[in-house]
Length: 209
Ligand SMILES: [Zn+2]
Image (cartoon, rainbow, N blue to C red; front, side, top):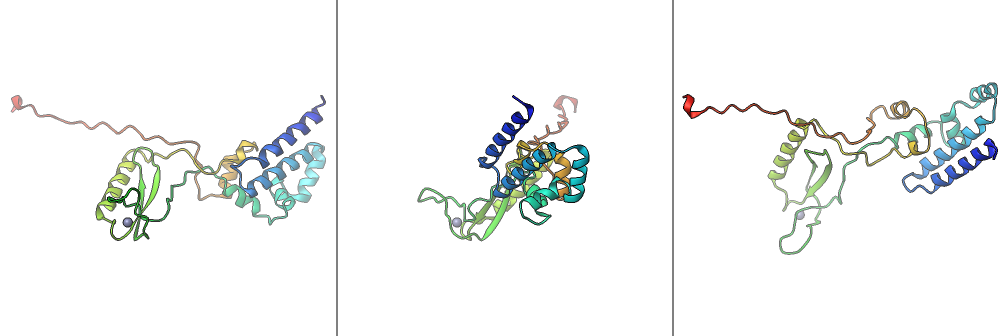
């Protein structure tokens, strides 16, 4: 089989995988397909022709926006939305107070919201309470857990959002993420809790007194 045919089949397969990937948003699908097409176009050009085309059409990021019929900043938005990160569970937005007489949660309109962090994993959860179920104890617990999380070295769970484009496109992602979303720190994986520093406890022996 010729190399060209192999490449064509690979690209065809890749486009199929991209459009069928449920993890990709509609914008991410369109972007990834455009990039595959651009790379295929450039592959067939000599380096001089490539240079000429890049000067005329801009780099692949600019070209992808044009090809998709979007504005130039579109690619930036697509990449910013795909930065691998961990996002808290926002819950239902209603009261999570536990009912005593019937099974389940209260579900009433929320009076106070708390973001609770798991001190050992950094997993975050939004919890809402209605006026009846709200208690200052929850706020105190939240503060204590947050302090514990800090002293555990601020662990973070594995990313649960983004990172879908890098499955298909190999490029300098850290650089692209920094360009598209300088305000976001991409997560490579989970950041485990650090082992708490051992505390030296001195026990005064009664016999020494
Ligand atoms: Zn309630």
